Image (cartoon, rainbow, N blue to C red):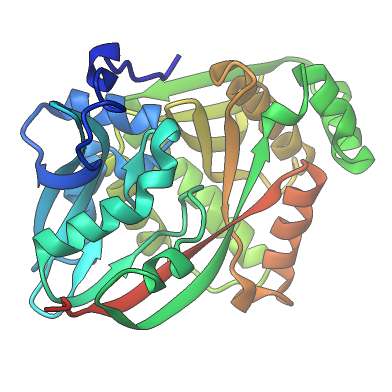
Length: 349
C-alpha cells in the first residue's frame, strides 16, 4: 500500500561501474496522477498533491511561476527517480511548495537533491518547508550546502498521532486520556440514534457553510475574533485545492446534525482540518473525533498518522488555543519537529 516500485535493473552495475553516484534535476512532464502516486509513496503532505501545488500559487504567491521537478539518481547507466518537488519562481524569491518529496529508501540523498535544485534554479532568495509536513527539519543540512548564506529558520511542531506505536486501534484507544473516553461514552449514552453521513466531491462544498457556522459560533463563545465570510472562503479555497482527497462528515442524532468534521486522506496519512459541534452537544465532538481517528487507523492499515496540525506557540495562553492543545494531548498526538527556512543562494564560482 502506497509503495513506489523501482526496477532492480536500476541498481545493476552501480557498485562495479566506478562512476560517481550523482543527482540531477529535470522538469516533470508526466500526469497529475503519476505525481500524486509518487508523493503518496513518499508520505508527503496533502499540500504536495498536484492540484494543491497549482492552487497554492494562487493563494500564496500569485505572481510566481510554478514549476515541477523530478530528481534523478544517476546510478551507472540507469537513472532512477528518487524525488520530486514544486517550486514557485517569483521576482524577489523562489519558494518551495511544501518540501522535496523523497522515497524513504533515498532519504540520505536529500542534500544532493537540494544542491542539484539550487544549481538548476540559480542564485536568489529561497524559502523551504511548510507547517503541515512531517518531514524533518532541514535547516542544518541547508546551512551545509555550498553557496548558502543568511539562513533563518522558524521551528514548527506538527502534532500527529503515530499509529505505529500500537498494534490495534483498541490498544491505541486504551491509551487515550480518561476524560476523552468519558466524553465519548457519555455521548453514546445521551443520544438515542447517532447517524454518520459522509460527503465527497461536490457534496463537501454543500457541507462547508454549516460547518463554518458551527465554528463561528464556537469562536464567539470562546471570545475569539473571527469572520464568517473569511472562514468560508478559506475553507472553500483549500477544499478546491484538495477536492480529490477531501471529505466531510456530519454526526446526527436521528435526523438532527449535532457535529461536523472536515478532513483529508492522502497516502497512508489522514489530516484533521476542521471540526465543531452545536453548543448544546459538547460531547458530540469527542464521539465524532473518535470515529475519524478509527477511520484513519484503518485507512493507513495501522502504519499511518492522524495529523492534527501545527502548534502555534504565539497563541499559547489564549483559552481557545490552550483547549485545542489539551485535546491533542488527550488523544495522544505528539510533536513532529520541522521548520520553515529562508536563505540566500549564491553559487560558488
